[in-house]
Length: 338
Image (cartoon, rainbow, N blue to C red; front, side):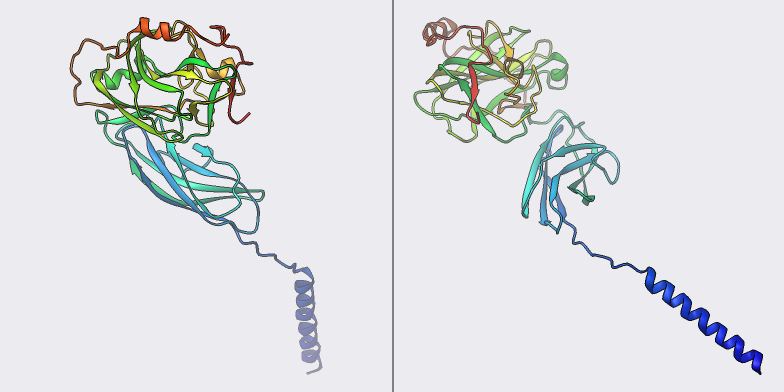
């Protein structure tokens, strides 16, 4: 009986010791509320681009250092796949981004992400499928948003354009180019003339037409009078000519980059005789022009290419350059954000 009591006491001492050890070893756990962004359904689905949509619905208790989208052919994409960073954010808000250079007729998975100093939090996954090739779509290099305007310190006239190579155009051979969209930043006395060029650098001007009523500080969608038929054996350059820019103004709308150098940012100060990449002329201007081109597989009419203003007239208009040289230096080009 005595031995049973001793054994019982030893068991009690052992259990008490375990309890003391357990409670002394416990630490207080601080619960932190995490941020969260929801992935919404994609919109504007075309053969090579879509608009991704999301919303920060809770900013949590830790500062958000970055947010954006990631996408992949496979489930549960991460930032190690294709991704777009949209930077820090301090409040709940909706956000969007136009994803380009997708493959046609292809299924993708997309989700939002939020990054803090502690973790990366992914949103729900949304799947989508791009349209088959051979439909109608907008071709462009910009992200679909205006960030700034670009101009010359001393004013003058100049061309901006985006460039598509013969390889880029193979799936659009024989398509009609019917509309051009751009973002003018300044009204009168500036005038805007949409332009189409074809061939290699420097290309030949084959179409120019005045835009009579551009939307200033907004997207101007202009239907050209004569649809242009794409020939994939020649490069296609599309843009607009800015006439009569006053000094220290910034009429040419651009996104916030980074530039697709040599394709999304071409500029000429000498009526297209020579062209340069904006981001090379002035590395601080690392932007793409807000220029988009609408093409459709409804075959365009085979027409003799029309110049709405003859080239010799353009050169005559452009004789007064306010002292600017034809060669553009980084000290001449400026942006309204500088």
